[in-house]
Image (cartoon, helix red, strand yellow):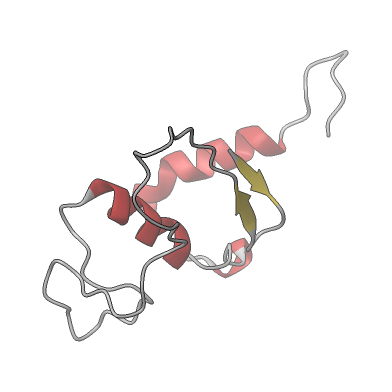
Length: 103
């Protein structure tokens, strides 16, 4: 379960059931600092976790933790290829149908 706190923080709650005797170790939160990536690090790659490819669970964790803040939308330079993004944002900004209150 994920609980959104604000634009840069969330809380992840994970629940596991284990039987006596089949749990072998402790819990790990995030990635160990000394863990190396599975792919070669590129010179331009300045992310916290670098070069993770081919291990879906780790790829997901790396993407979630390395996204950073939601950028200021007014500073974007949208191109013609972003037409779908522009259309969706316009739909979100439209007034709701009669009888429905805008949040």
